[in-house]
Length: 315
Image (cartoon, rainbow, N blue to C red; front, side, top):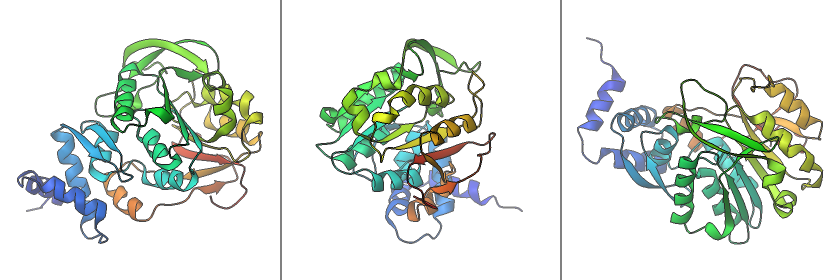
């Protein structure tokens, strides 16, 4: 008889009350790596099959409302972190008093992370297009009493003023919500769209230390809406950009965006990312640094890119 270790582990975990809490504590805090990969896979599968709502504490000390049916919120609940490599790099980059711009803020994980880094004198602009997700974002900002340093904006960043439809992603991954027409997603709302340069105040533009852009297919228009303001930005401004390997509705590819930003003096780096539960075990223990890309990026691949004027093998 062939034993499926993964399914057996899921069954054992499901039959032991309180085991998920113990597993979460072990995965988050134990220096040992023994069995964490199987445990991570099992509790992830269990929580996705039996979703519930919970307030979870992140590794950086903020509380977030999480519905475990959603991938991002489930991982925050289980591991206390989302995208461990990028999280560690942002924590290293941001300093007290800095300004962070979160384009595609989702439920607010990176907004809260930045708030924990920039302190009382820092400032965060959280931009989220979906009205329903914006409500979750606002709830998490209020829950952590950081509203005085966070300006939340329910608009879509683009390259020109107008209106766009928001297509809401599936319940198990609301991070796929987009303003790119999607036949499998329902239209949630029609909202205002503005160039990023017009969304940000002059002070926010000139003081921004880090801008993160995660907009599920509209990276090109968002970057174009930012370009006119780049000459007034800090010399040490860095950008984090997720590209999904698909052209924009205008046919623009990630390579086009890279070329535009290289023209403004930015070098491009790639940061490792994986969305498998077992990969989080190693990533939390040994986060990897962004690695320099000198040539073209693969136009068909998803990637997390970092743009910096620093010229080095890695950041």
